[in-house]
Length: 378
Image (tube, rainbow, N blue to C red; front, top):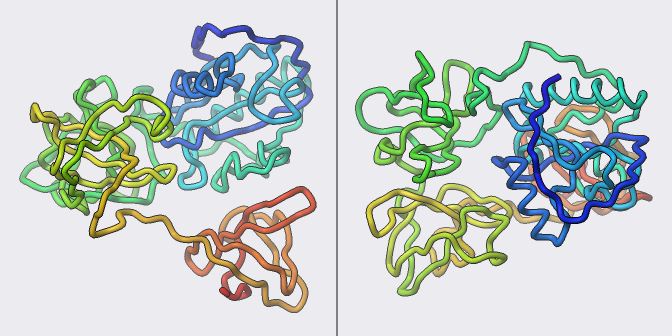
C-alpha cells in the first residue's frame, strides 16, 4: 500500500519498541493533519507525534513515529505496540469508509511484516472513550471488517462522502455554488443549491475557501466553496453573538485556547455568527476590521442572551430491570458490558430512545448505549 512520508523531525526519540499489538485511536478533532497532531503533542513536551501512523478522512495514510520507536499514545503499552490514529472526533461523527478501508490495508501490511498482531482500542487499556463510540472496534478486533462499497475517496484533495448529521446554516441567494477541492480546483458537475442546509466547518481566508458538509441526493459530502460565497451563508444564529466593550481573543484551533497566543481579536461591540462547539469552546465567524471573513474559537462569551450550541448536561440515572441491562457499543449494536438493577449510572446524552451512559466496571469507567426504557433519571 502507499504510505505518505511525513518527514517529521523528532526531538530525542527513544527506540526499542517491540510491538505485539496494534492500538487504534481517534484524534478527537474533526479536521486535522499529521502535522497538527505533531504540533499538539510537542505542546505536551513530547518528542513529536506519539502515533506511528495517521489516517486522514480521505483515506491517505501518513507516517508518524518509526515503528521501532517507543510511542506516546497508550499508558503502559508504548514500548509494545503500534499506535494508529484516525482523523475525526469519533464520539460525534463516523469514520469515513475510505479511512476504514485504509486502516484494513495498513493492518494487513503491518501483519505481513510482523505476524498476526491483535487489534485493540485505546479504551481497552486506559480510562478513555477512544477511539470513540462510532468506530467499529469489534469488527477490527475479531477480523470481521471487510472493505465494502469501494473507497469513498472521490478526490484525494478533501472531497469525500460524510456521515455528519449536523447542520448550522442555510444557503441563500440565487444560483448554484460551485464545489471545489481543498486546492480550490473545480469538482465537475458538483454544486450547492439555494436553500440547501449545510454544516459549515471553517472559514479560511488565507486559503480562500470555506470548508463544509453539503447534501446531494441521499448523500452528504465534505467539500469546499470559494470564500467569495461567504455572504450567501445564513447561519442559524446569524450575527447573534454580541461582543461587549472589550477585545475578545480568538483561536483557530480549539486545542490552542488558553494555551497559545490568540490568532485573532474580535473588536469591541462587534457581532459574530456562532457555528458550533468543539471541546467545549464556541466557534464563531465574523468580519475582520479589513472586511475579510474569518472564524475561530472564543474562551469568553460575555453576557450572551443565548447559550449557543450548549452541550447536554450530564444527568444521574438508576437502572430499573429485573436482573441486568446490556450495554452496547452503538444504538442496537454489539454488547460490550452489563449494568445491574439498582446500579447508578451517568446519562451523557439521549438519542432515539437510547441513553449514552457512563458506568463503573472492574477496569474503571466505561461508556455505551442502553435502552432508555430501563434507566430512570434521578
